[in-house]
Image (spheres, rainbow, N blue to C red):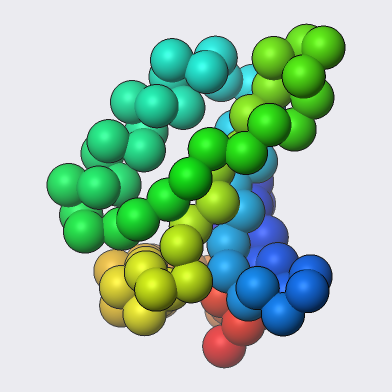
Length: 83
């Protein structure tokens, strides 16, 4: 629940998962697992020099993410879903 945040920069209104501790290959595996849950995402370069990446959840998948995780989230973290 803690390694990510709601991003409303430029009105994108989506989630960023802070996956900098994973390798690019591991991030791709995580993306494939999200895709199996019908969650679209893209891999964003966070730090080119150190090969650090973040996963951005597609805006079109936000309803799906919320429906899957809301019931498991602590009330103090619901703001990360902008609800």
